[in-house]
Length: 390
Image (spheres, rainbow, N blue to C red):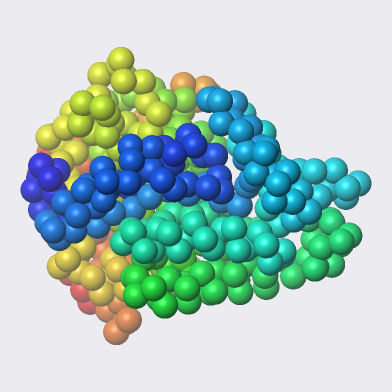
């Protein structure tokens, strides 16, 4: 609640590692690890204050055995004949596509009715529990279904367009089930929804952090799809293995500024102390980011999203027609060379009425100077210059 006051906005805690079997051990999530009553008290406290509640899922995998605790799903697997509906490789081998370091298991084939029933039951539980957002397809990046070559399933025995058709229909059915329960819960995925699934998952975890190790990411998704789906900054889960935070203590401010200019809603991750952290799974024994500048930036960004929803919520990202000249911001990486970025984060947006606004962010704690079409502009610390709509 303190952060909500500091941000001057509603918040949505997005719970990770909340599922009772352990983190990322799908498909059975309920009851929560802390107990049903504790979960409901937390939910009610948020809702009564006007806030929202979100939870993570872990896609369409069936966990046979956890590699991080003692959980085993094998007995249920055997008793319910789960093996008949899981993915097969081209030689008939059983397959699990992702997160093999934390679990043994097999992927559920969404082409099979029984798989869809198992997954739908979990969605319905959360809808009844008045959860507002379920990132169900975390680890099914983009909402994709995994390849299946099974010869006895109700789909062709090779990957193909049937996968997209089945997943799209399945997601639409899930949303129908949610609405029939008088719930407004939204479904989402990791790395943003692929084109065919936009209508079913209009709010997603669009993190570009992985690309920071390879070069300067281009917000191509926002250029193409932002008018149809708003996404958020994500849990930034590989900061600790990517960015040298000690050498670059304002890198979270830099990343938040990039996200704002790309039209993303903003997220922060928290330590056990309640402090804002660099990202999920960061080392709590090392210093946290400076709190005040992060809170100040998010507060400013939220105010601008409310002031300019026609651009930052309903608009489409466009290429700037102006010449920006500014210094460089160096992002030191733990592996490989450092990356250089413009010292001013910027983004141009076109509203549905055709008007364009541009945003220029000084995310650092000292005054910045930049030149726009030859005109010098001084920007106070932690502030945004808005080139008014034209």
